[in-house]
Length: 219
Image: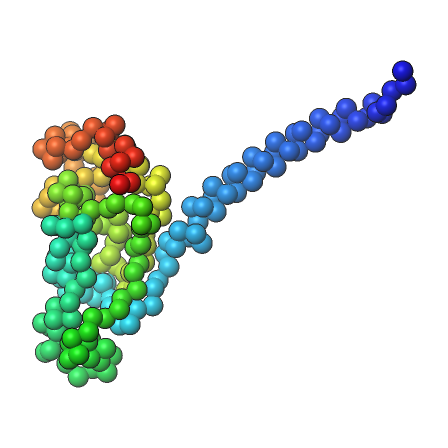
């Protein structure tokens, strides 16, 4: 029987298979990088707010504690947004006539909350509780970055599942003494591994299996 395909077709077939594998691998690699990019995760994106509140000024320069504005961060799932009354505690005296702060004064006069643009926004199918993370020794800067250096707040981390699991698989690397949770100057190297292991025991942090169970975050 006469040969139907030319012998060169064997080489073409091999090259095609290799090219298909390389293309598939390249496509997969490209997608993993794009999925982690700021284009999709909104990392480093500064949101335009009704009033450009500067954490750098209030936290970094003036030393205001996180809990003064985010009053429920230790007790509820949400850290809470400050009421206009909280702002006016200072700004009824400081910059009281500044046109820049007129939206704040209007909110206070009209008893109408300011509509802030959310910066950190998890999907609806993710359950996140601020109070349990604070209770287990996770500091603000671990997730939110150096807020005290941000004139406008942006999302420091991807907030993707793999980022959360990095901590849940080995939480003692990311915990600190409770006295330092709101300390923006804290560094991970400020305590050694032995102290971290002791903190994990003191805080009664659950096992890796439970920490990485689907139902822990997806309820």
